[in-house]
Length: 293
Image (tube, rainbow, N blue to C red; front, top):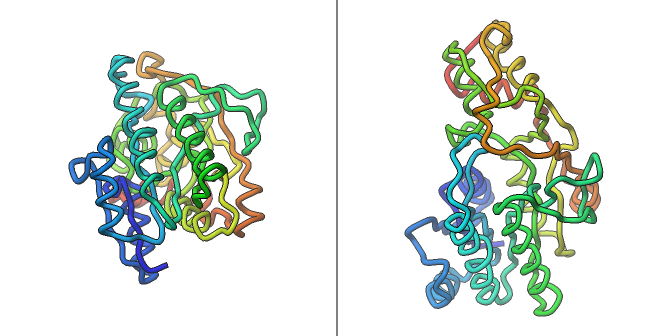
């Protein structure tokens, strides 16, 4: 691969992916909000023609943390459809021979019947983010099967790094531990399949390189509670988390099921496996905030 286009390049994943690709000698073009109108087919087509990429990574998303105040549903739906579906359609139309990766989400599963989820788990999203990401997956499948585009969807579970936005739970807990500050969280018992973001951007590249395009779960397969996250973070600075962390149900604006991904297909097809475990991930997050035990 000699050239890649990253749409949604200013976020955590876009920055990490761009750095990894550049290290491999790939010419990377990144665009983000304000650089291109994803709702305008001509603008997208002109961008793809100008870059002439071998691979397009569609990472653009409209989302926010579970502890953020929600937007009105009509506004949220309109913005989400524009980014997760309309812009994606325009990219797939313009892709030509380029391989396309679409960043989907574990939220497409909603409240599943199974403890772990794979590519065959029914998608029953319960929020606008999951609904529109699921629709994006359907669009990708259509272009793959009906139009012959080498297009894949990565069903990404939670993945963290020091680049994660400050309102996300992992960032809030790591920052509180590093600063030795008290913190309130929405739920201590909530469990999450957390991974290291650089592992997940590596998975994106392997999916693009795979000769078999399709849907791929990207996950660690392990769930950890918010209490475990807090315990590990405060232990990293020599503190007992129970003296620093409290639970406030009023903070949580939306709640969901425990989602744990089964990445067996990805592992079998590409050899991918996470390289950073939960404990190491938390240590890195706290250390990135300037803390030492």
